Length: 269
Ligand code: GLN
Image: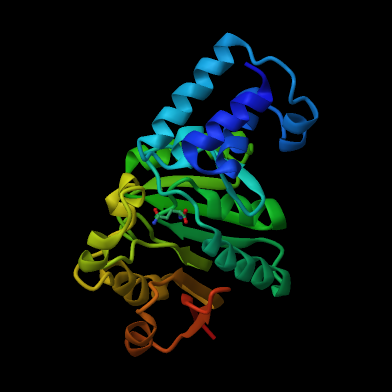
């Protein structure tokens, strides 16, 4: 089968040209432009089988990132699979905020703690764009940390990012310039309404008790105490949690591009 025919067929089966292009690009190790410039090229039998298999899994509702074992975050590629939460575009806002914070800091090197690191996309991208952080990244899931390790090794950051298995703050006994977290914050009620696709992601990475605030409460109560003077605690919040979070502790809440409250900042000034 030719590239153009495989593209057309996958597009039809998936109902998405963007996804069809992503799958073909991935299997053929080529970018999108290549697909169109070489549309008459024959795809090998082996690659065609791989494409069919991926399209089948995707049609079965497996998120594209899990099917491709890859997610893009801050313009970088990360290995992901069912053991971790898929990095979201909105979380890039927190990373940008941290990068700006680091740029303003007079310190040469800043200590960073990422709580619930998942794929480790946050500390890796912060380091990639600043080269000024020394990180401890924690996750209570050992299997998530295996994915994190793979990404840390891929980016050759073993000396700059230490991975620690443990629940929230229990494994830690030092303070940090930056404490960051994209915690689970979906309430039990809202979790019932999320799509089947999102339900394929680890539930521990998404849901946090009746009001979704179980982990955020600990971040505010305990995480705050781990922030060094002039440091910052920053964490993502749910669309309806701004008031509740503000009532727990004075903080600044920032919105995302859609105007939805997205993250909270607590400064230790
Ligand atoms: N820190 C990771 C991310 O933002 C994982 C978040 C999580 O598992 N809740 O992608």
